[in-house]
Image (cartoon, rainbow, N blue to C red):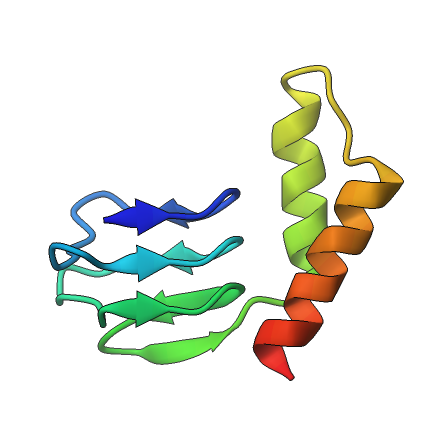
Length: 89
């Protein structure tokens, strides 16, 4: 299993061997997730997946990174915005 940066999963979340999870995903649920989960995905295999809103994702990233005395740089923010556009259309 490979999980991208800034992705999170709940306790007891179930994945198959070889599952790939993109960046900025929030996943939960004990039902096995699909093999490939695109970046900026939110949800579970049962409740359907939705798109994680970019503004909320960036806010959470800033909160988490500030605990480590780091803030998103302009370059990092632009990179995440570009990936969001590429993966969500």
